[in-house]
Length: 217
Image (cartoon, rainbow, N blue to C red; front, top):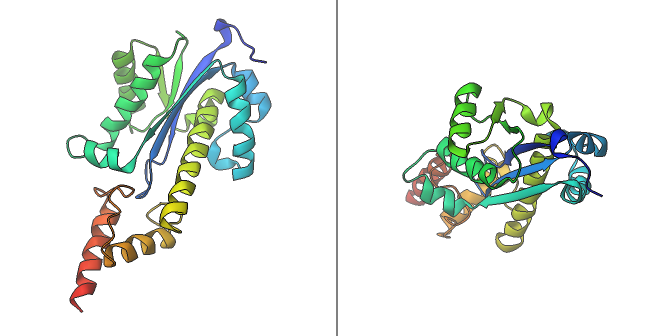
């Protein structure tokens, strides 16, 4: 049963997958009663096990007053980064979700800008809502914690789908040796992985150079 009046509602926005070289970035917004999210155990998704995140995912969906999830694929990120940077991509995604929110309450955002106040002003201007951006907001505001869980679970599911299609590609993060080996092996074999790999990332460019130099020998 969804509880909460407009007076004690808050909305949170957070992403998963900003840094990986493989797979999508996922941005989610969740609006609801912070006490409900707190009671169910919502907190920063990185502090929860995959099993706990999956369990909470359904509870958050059931108990939220509003939620929306935006999946930005690697190919879409590649196209966007031909003309704008990653922060600008996130600004567009976050402002789009916040603008869809039916509530006039405060909207809390896990800040991706080093300057929290600058991002707060920018998103408030873009959306006409009161937006509060804070670093580690996923640990400070239950609604942001809930949004971080939706984003993380959704990205994990998308990575699982990609693994079923392309084989073991690891977590998708640049430091993951499985991910690096997957990219390098694919490039050496001449496979087109541009649809799932972020080609603007330095990791991809470095591995592309390595694959080409290897072929010379």
